Image 1 (cartoon, rainbow, N blue to C red):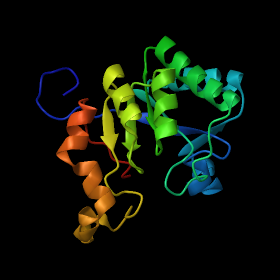
Image 2 (image 1 turned 180 degrees about the vertical axis):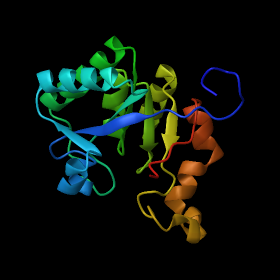
Image 3 (image 1 turned 120 degrees about the vertical axis):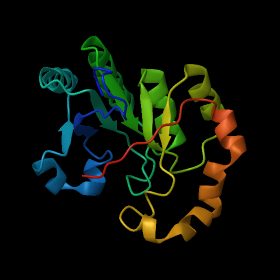
Image 4 (image 1 turned 90 degrees about the vertical axis):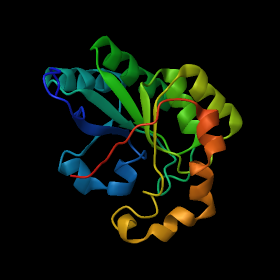
Length: 193
């Protein structure tokens, strides 16, 4: 598929989700996820660059970064200037290494910071309704979005509970007006192992 000799979906592989102490997913998944190598916590600008370079050396297709403010995360705490600098450093280094970088962003503030830093896509975004100005920024920047339709409320049992799709919050995310206003690329992602 990757060489275009066969038709099919293009699968991209990433390394661990990069996180800053207190950010998603380290705050939700805990120490076990860090110990298992699913999440890597970044503390310094040097470490941000070093980890991204190491991922490039491993020939991953893209870098994932988790941002604060997911549905079960740190309650939507605003990014400090240093945290935003760490995010922008990861983005800059990924681009320097010619890799894509995607952000898990659950709030409008996290989406706006991700777009400002230059992420290539937002994944599992949409855990709260986005303000019109954030939608406009996403559209203007043409940042692809893979929304989380109801993953935060039903990570493992969603398929057996379709009533979640009828919830007002989920319907607002799925409305044609919201999707049309976003007017950017939508795609599918999965964290399924």
